[in-house]
Length: 531
Image 1 (tube, one colour):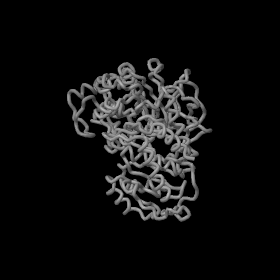
Image 2 (cartoon, helix red, strand yellow):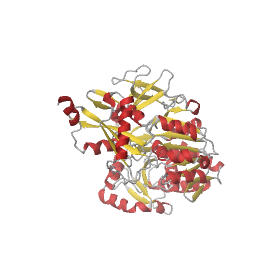
Image 3 (cartoon, rainbow, N blue to C red):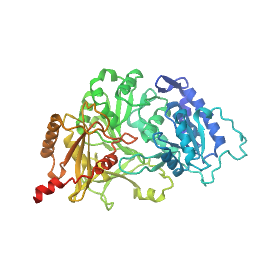
Image 4 (cartoon, rainbow, N blue to C red):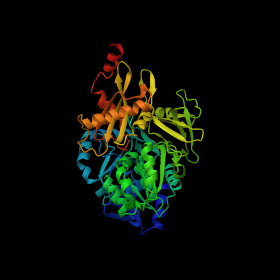
């Protein structure tokens, strides 16, 4: 039985005339969404053997995305939401890796689909325009006959409902497979943590190919609430959508909150409908967090989690003041340990890898048994993140394990440096990275984004007296608050920081960019030390 579709159908029948989706100026009722998803599920069931179809879609319109995912759920098939920004080669590689046999696409991606078709000789992939799906003539409607598409590369049915290709900041994408039951339980977790009801309007400013975007679709639609989709994020559009559609609950990636920083703090009257803001994907700095706690006038939660295990911790509003340096305590039925490199549990206040045991764990990394096995230690998922748990049980996030900078044989955590430097009022964002150096192994760079900077994308700002002064002030902050080995060697001032598709700062891209400069970073230090 399709538990996701059944939950949606119950909501749709109960709230048939209610608005299910708002996207731009378009609204869709629950009745319309139910009818469309049932029509499309019927078409798909004749195109593909039940339980075996792997359906990818290139879609950005909320109605298409919702109806397609619900249609796939109804026939117990698997959907692979796909990032349309990828190249044709990247698309084909991802679809082959996940055994896609049907690709549904919106008209604006027709040219990219043509490129894909020229790159693949795999006859098992059927390309169908979404506009053509409703009127598609099914030649083999008799269920006793073979479906149009053959599936020689897929041997058995499975319990995978969605396969999400991760877009982390430090590694290659992994195909994360999640069941329908898990998706439903994850939605229920959000309802309970953030007190979401059918009366709420929930803003989604994340793409559906990212796990947060998926959560922001299923959380309202399986409950009878209203989904407000923001197809293109800008601070102005976000504020306008909250005000116009009386949005009450928001779950945002931290990069969106940083971009909204000034608007959130200066437009409180326009945001009066907001009852809850949740930040996810990456911790926000403590100073900004304190400002939000004090200024917005609504509940503010910070959560920690991963696509593989959903939400693992939550910082509830009642702890926002005294525990603002943490990401909260474990959610109900979730257990967290801090592990050393040899996978032994560390005591309180010791930094190690965050390991999570949760009933909301993913199924597998699709067709990657060894990778799946290596991701666990005694039923605890190894997040690849570093943190520590205080004696009070609250988790503090330190950074990505791969983000550790090893300079002169010393382990250095970028989060410590970022926390110290973001006290400077001129900094809007900051990323601390390590780049290769023959003498020290790695040296520390600070990549800074200033408030109200209007220069062109990724342009390194020319030196000026103002920037020199800011750099001097940052160095004084570092000298005051950081050990000598923690202090950045160089400071760069850019317009923006590169982001992954999920809205996280891509330190992988930053490291690649600055490593390409090929500088002998430690030459001045060697000259000073060795004359």
